Length: 82
Image (cartoon, rainbow, N blue to C red; front, side, top):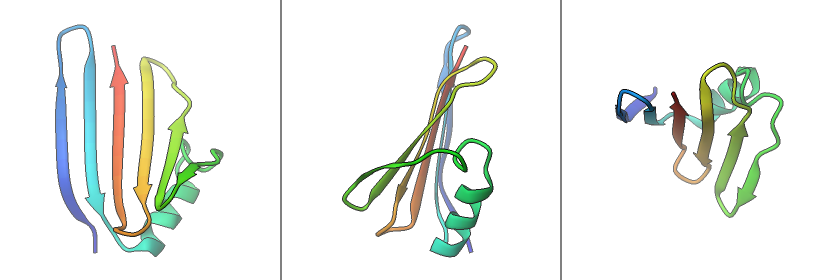
């Protein structure tokens, strides 16, 4: 079962940011990472227990990343656009 930890939007009338943080079983996270358009074709940068997926920007998105902590099974998603 997944648990939402954070869902936040911020920014001005020129820029927007969304952040989502959740915890889920490892099997569910791995399936999601493999099937998602943004992460399925990206090799993550690994630093200890952290896997960082830099997502190629599309449309109005300027920056997107997914950070997965394999020890805590916590996923953090950040997206910026204007």
